[in-house]
Length: 181
Image 1 (spheres, rainbow, N blue to C red):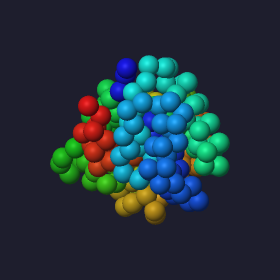
Image 2 (cartoon, rainbow, N blue to C red):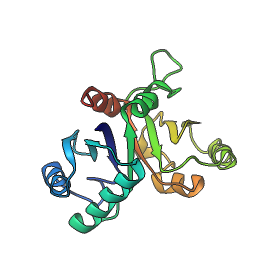
Image 3 (cartoon, rainbow, N blue to C red):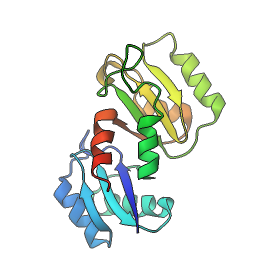
């Protein structure tokens, strides 16, 4: 079976509070295998041979049925998670790179149209110091001064790009990768 990462959006932020032990138990009861949670922010490593889109729908249904909230779920392979770190142009060392806490990869439900991304960059260019780049179903974002002071909220990005997403910073992704073997 393939080892995969399920990134659950909006877990333990806002009103969507759930203990990872309860989340893991609910997913195990539904037949998911080899479950490992990483941090308390909706990172679930699992083994499964189904198509990612099937797993995403299954996990979203469990979250709605068992915990009473709607969440977007993105399933990625270890190679895709590794790529989200290595290909992020704002990650690394040197003065041109951001801190691992501020540099994020936002995993997207679909590849945004190029014109939507360019319009987003143009619209935001005079509003903030954040830096943006587009990858393969990933938006790379350096929040520079912090997520809390940015106008680039998840809802704003979803409206502009016409797809859902869930973000993880470089510290989180490195931690997740270390546990995916």
